[in-house]
Structure formats: C-alpha cells, structure tokens
Image (cartoon, rainbow, N blue to C red; front, side, top):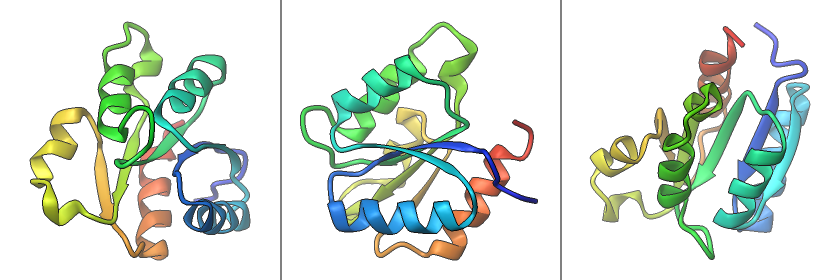
Length: 127
C-alpha cells in the first residue's frame, strides 16, 4: 500500500525529531504539515483536512494528550481521525492514559521508523 498523497499533521516540538519524521514521511510521498505546540495543532486541524495525526504528548502551550482530547470532543467525522502518540517519557505514564485521551496507538522514542510507517499505513488504508 502506498502512502502517496496522504496528509499527515506532525505535532512535535523538537526540530530534530520533526525533521526526521518529515523526511521519513516525505520518502513515503506523504504531504506533511507541522506544528510545534498543542494550540497550533488545534488551529491547523481546524483549518485543514488530514488523514492522520502524529502527536508528541509533551508539547508546549497545550499537551498532546489535551490536544487529542479536544480533537476527540469535536462533533464532526473529523474528530475520529487516527492519532498516533509519540513520547520520550512514556514510562512515566500508564499506557492507558494515551488510549483514554483518544489516541489510537503510541510509539515510544527513540522511534522505530519501520513501525511508524506500518502504523501510518494501517490507519490510512481506508482513507
């Protein structure tokens, strides 16, 4: 399955990780929009349509968990977008918090890029 033309919103405050994610997803022919904080995620999510969100849980202004909860609280079909959580300190949180916030999956940093692409394909195959 190809990821060509899939629109992915990458929410990550680390420029290094954000650039790595962009390169990996661009290699798979995705269209990428980036956000560095939780409020920007919500603003971009409202302004555009995406196929998937990759969400760091530790974002400034508004955490990735809170941004996910707000997306899920929406009343439109858009609120059901697949969200993959990423975190460097997931060991400090029970896995259940990711899912309770509304994330479909989560991956711990350092990221396994093959696993990430597998999940992106899994959650965008019907879009």
